[in-house]
Image 1 (cartoon, helix red, strand yellow):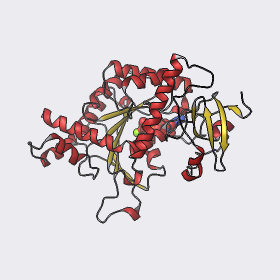
Image 2 (image 1 turned 135 degrees about the horizontal axis):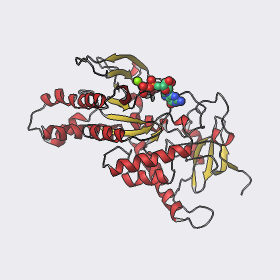
Image 3 (image 1 turned 180 degrees about the vertical axis):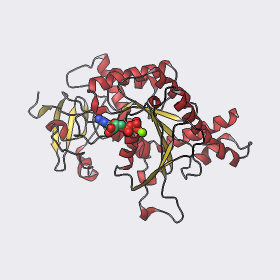
Image 4 (image 1 turned 180 degrees about the horizontal axis):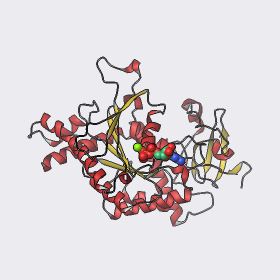
Length: 381
Ligand SMILES: Nc1nc2c(ncn2[C@@H]2O[C@H](COP(=O)(O)OP(=O)(O)O)[C@@H](O)[C@H]2O)c(=O)[nH]1
Ligand SMILES: [Mg+2]
């Protein structure tokens, strides 16, 4: 053990390609410390940045570290080679697999960064949140709109609902475009959140599932009337993925799971996945130990795979997601999220990754999928 080696006390889930995964107990070599709360470290074979709280432990009131000033550090990061063998000799099979998956997560972040948007120019996006009742769905939407990327958000508006006993679906308009960047006549509200009632609020889960699934499909109908039935599929997809907000299709459904996966969750996700990109998340991550989160990730991802439900893995395939959950590698779907004010680094928290994925790195990919789903739906009519 070298002199400046230290055991990690907190978590860090990288959301950029030059950062490294850290979990409590990892033996870290601290290469350099910076005045704004970041450190350059070696964690096994991986070299990169992490916030200093991972070695200091968390103290009450500690917030998220400030963003790094890239130019200050880049020269220190000579190379990142997560696939190089560790210092302890030949890696075991499981170490090699871990290295491969971590490298994949890292390279995805890197590749995506090259084409990344910023939240202010991410274009229009409609994000639905669904799952059981009272588990933090509405709080997650508010946590998103209160983050730095958002400049304003409007009141939650309830949709008109003519059915007598029917749960309410609400839309929340929000903006990531600073007023100074707004073009004349442009709608500032580029982001729409769709809040849905929870499964448990009605005796019969279908009372919730049916209207939500129908809401998703209903968004396709007005667009359908705008295009000739003979327009080539690729042309239609190219027109619709542009991000100018000319339609109201739901781009993603964040499906929230608390503490355990129920058969009804699988059925709900299966029905949604026909017309919308589903991203499962583990909600209220602060109420679980990291061990419990990883175990739930494994159960969720294995059952989704067994049930053949297509979900969005932010570039990682089904087998990678299963391996990541099994080997307890942070940074893979289902992301663990938390909307509560908390001490940073104390729980496994991948909220930043979800935000970055949705509003920056993967936004084009997600919109393309929405356009392809619309086009497939149209062919089925
Ligand atoms: N510990 C913890 N509590 C949360 C979190 N998110 C929401 N809550 C609490 O969970 C309760 C239900 O939240 P709400 O957003 O209304 O749930 P919904 O019915 O699913 O929309 C509220 O008391 C929230 O304060 C979280 O990330 N961690
Ligand atoms: Mg709610």
